[in-house]
Amino acid sequence: MRLILLGLLFLNFPVMAQEAISAKAWLENMSQALREQEFKISLIQLQADHIRPLVYIHGKIADQEVAFLEHLNGPPKNAVRVGQTVTFIEHDQPAYSVAAKRIQGLFPPAFADDFSALESGYQFVLGGRTRLAGRPGQLVRIIPNDNYRYGYQVWLDMETSLPLRYDMLTQDKQLLEQILVVELLVLDEVPAILHEAYKQDWPAVVSQSERDAGDNWKFKWLPAGFEVLVKDSHRLMGSDESVEYIALSDGIANISVYVARAGDAQMPEELVTRNGLSLVTERVGNAEVVAVGKVPTETLARVAKSITIE
Image (cartoon, rainbow, N blue to C red):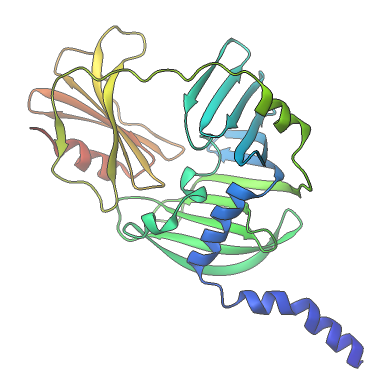
């Protein structure tokens, strides 16, 4: 009987030791794991009526991160990252590369970054524990400090700190998007597919369009933590008209703002909310402003109305 009790105590010790880990420390461990570990995860991405099965493989070669993302349904569609270059490979168009620290469309890039940068907009709270993909997981809630953005929650594997599930939620706790890992494999060595990706001669990075010398748009109001990341000129799809483009982010949530002189370009007018993505069009002086992002529509409207020229 004494041996049984000692055995149970030994098995529970790692869990007991983890009780002292804060929510932020769990997230920092996840960030390190996503950057440093060799692993393969099979997962399902749920967005409204879309279900996408994916496979993601990650490792390090010569101190560079190498990753591969494969879409399992539909026409072949893959993405490869070597260092800070991501190459997209699709069946109906030539492969092309962009400068990026992470492959978009999986977990938020902030999950592998510095979580201190998120503290002006969010607080981190420990939740309960459950079993996911056959592994014990710790829930961490990423709760917004205001009503200008959505909330998130992530379950972390208690052995590796890698994410096992990720939810994006409205203020009313309605699920907008979910990524659910169905299998996590921790690898002993970098798999052959990543070595091949590392050696491959991928297309050169697409050069960013140079911003025309023109209007210097500013914002009189942005939610706490949001910053301007990019300003340049974009051409609207199916049109030769150029519009000003401004990218905003708080580290997790992203907002894209498009500005055109009224009547110069045909801007979308409808307001759409789908899978958490909202679109708002506002008339500001003699300009039309479109704001798009996975944030509440009220946030987009206020951001769009606050734009001004200096």
